[in-house]
Image (cartoon, rainbow, N blue to C red; front, side, top):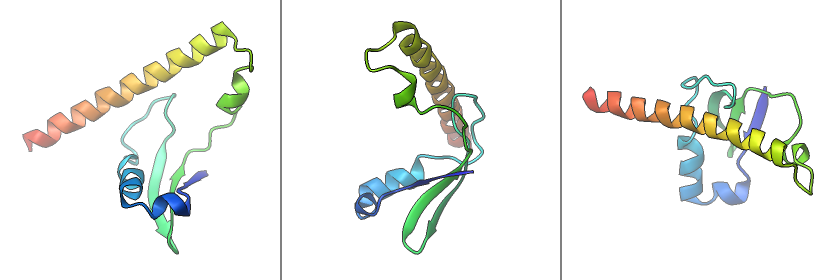
Length: 100
């Protein structure tokens, strides 16, 4: 399990806090390119997400400073696929909620 903590300075901004709370939809999307969010929490004024721990290399370490075109293209393709899955899922949720 991994935690993503919203820094206190950002949590003090109502718009940022609203975005942090609203962005994840626990259990709503299963895609290999998107981390699974288990919950959105707050404890003692600290706002955080509990999420799937992904083993591997950080993105900033995966791309050499000089850049490697094939690595960048592979990562960009995976990100585009994940974004498409998210967008498709969000669109279907919005459509079904309008029907009810």
